[in-house]
Amino acid sequence: MFELLRSTSLGRRGKLTTAHGIIESPFFMPVGTAGAMRGITLEDLSDLQAQILLCNTYHLHLQPGEETIAAAGGLHSFIGWNKPILTDSGGFQVFSLKSIRKISEEGVAFRSHRDGSPLFLGPKEAIEIQWRLGSDIIMNFDECPPSTASRPEIEKAVDRTLRWAKVCKETHDRLLNTGIQEYRNTGTPSTPLLFGIIQGGLHRDLRRKCAEELVAIGFDGYAIGGLAVGESEEEMMDVLRELCPLLPADKPRYLMGVGVLHQLKACTALGIDMFDCVLPMRIARHGTILLSDGTDIRIKNSSFASAHEPIDPDSPSLWSRRHLKSYLHHLFALNERYAESIACKQNLGVTLKMMQELRKMMDQK
Image 1 (cartoon, one colour):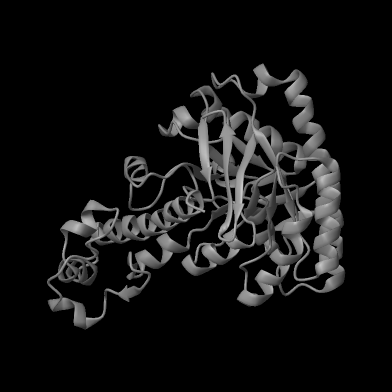
Image 2 (cartoon, rainbow, N blue to C red; image 1 turned 120 degrees about the vertical axis):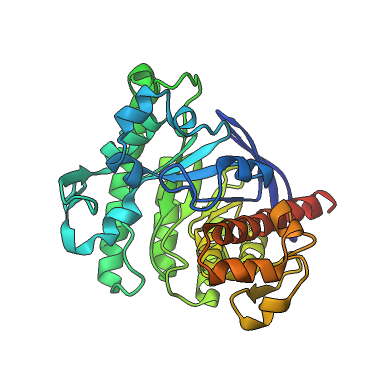
């Protein structure tokens, strides 16, 4: 569970206890969609002091399937990661398949993006799958409308999200009471933490309604979804200013899909405790390198062909302290896989290091 240690002008400092260890907050979660990260290993994540890994229920359900993972002893054993794991519900991925899905009150019928086979995922199924995976933190199945949706569409999505949240909570409680052996054959005696997800677009009243009703149902933590999807930064901040004061102080607050460094700081100051995003890795693969001093460079630019200096002498990654900018430029020019590995480890390392420094500064307040 969550212990709030102190509140400062920089944000909230806390500890989140899970079945696989304590996570110091605020924190950033690397995204290992199917249990792995492109370009770097789980050992690299440990070297960078990542505290937790985020994996994707939708992708793991499709391949290799939760039954296979449960038979291996759960997701931790299957991938070889002994720290906490959060799995999202798969809702965002399912709702992105707009042309091949059909929504009903029970859930969403859709076709696999891999082979076109018919599949169904709803609130009950999403919770049962995540229990079988053996996750430490599991997420409600929600409806995430696009930011361009009309208000009536967003209202319907909020109402459905709330109805599904009750089903998620009922399913979770049932498994807590009766289904631990059947659904959680992972060797882990503790049970997962269940987070609700707040939707509502940029409509403050809908966000407020969703937050208040989720809090009334009662969850172990509260996530804010449907942001960082095209709205302005100030619009995102306005939603957070509205929501954070409504959420229980003794429960963690999770902003989904945000990974820009200055936004991580700003959102932490508003009261957010946890984040995830593929952005640091995505821009790394295209040659944008985040540096420890807060700047970034486009390593593919020709000016770096003769930059015979370390990529980042203060980097948490040994590779970036050892290798030259000119060498990384050279690797990208040749499309060498090692270029991606160096860049991804650098960007993730800088992101995690910034959150570590934030925690240290809060401890000194």
